[in-house]
Length: 521
Image (cartoon, rainbow, N blue to C red; front, side, top):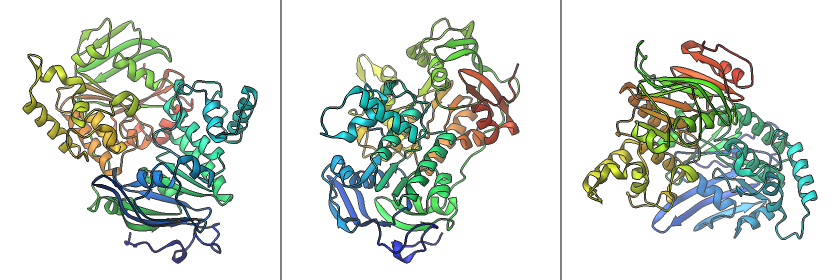
């Protein structure tokens, strides 16, 4: 991919079907945003035509989400200019940006967990529009969900009771229902499986026909290939290149993002020898959402967990870590029978867990980076009621270095980090801690390609040292390329077990929608 510095929409060939007679819908020029001494955005420029999908790509901390939040009215720019439909655009709030036609579906959901789906869909769009009856609210929500083909979600359900993927769909639906002229999708697909992504692409293409511009922020390069007409690469808060559909390869784009040659995407884990010891063995596991699961994990094995969201994956992972009540006819960890498992006893038995939602389950955002890494380990570092600071700091430094976490130091609040660096913290707290098994719920969600490669390498290194890994991913390609074995859940039951060359995207997705594959006896 030849580097192109801000060539501008008018100088590039437009994507098929895009109007070229009018000027750009959006023109961003030398956008800068400071947070104290930190330059989060330090010179970003790009243009979007009506009906165009424009990708913003870059590593975690490159400034993509900050740009999205400036355009959505959540932040004010320090300097630079934004023209929307030829007019200076300086919204002072998300509400004002929405009223002017710019709406963002945020990666970190801007929804109210205690409200119903219908309330989350309808009430934010009404502003100060007066009293709304429950009947009209429900009718409007049903209309929106029907138009957007979301009939599988109950509009009367409490939002917080839904799987993360369904909550993400509601976030997207809420943004689309506001009838924007510019829609910003900030990692909106990060919690979606392949079917959810295709639903999203269908909605984006509908908007393109209407002349709506779309900014698509994603780390999933296959999605950028499929949906983006053009795009811009950000690195360290600066625009470094622009690209058009078909003009780049994955390695070229990753090199632009990182400023160095791309590494190998998927490292291959070593083969697990026959007779390798069992770390976790369960027969007849049942709970709310699970039905008679037989489960085993060997030392050094990377076991993938596939299936559509809401079919028992979250419940299984939480049960394995003792985070939900479950029963089984037999339950063993490291060859010892377990009668009752809690998160504390799971940690004591050598297990670690990366939860689904880093902000609500994985981190204390107001605490420092170091404190978040140490959360499960305060007893390990305690001596006579105090903390051995030298040992603590050394371990923190090793973890931050191993995962290249972009943080000013251990005292920086976790909430100030980018989403990808927050995810690294949740994963990193289990490194170098003599774990027997790690239970991972979509650990690469919302992180950039290079960070994924670092996590893949860390996982392979852990597996080769004998750590067993249970890994649920919404990116099926990860399971295909990284796992020794994959089990697929459908309606709380294992419907397919795939090994070796049986592990393909087609086999995993087919089993996920109810087409049975090979199930072990």
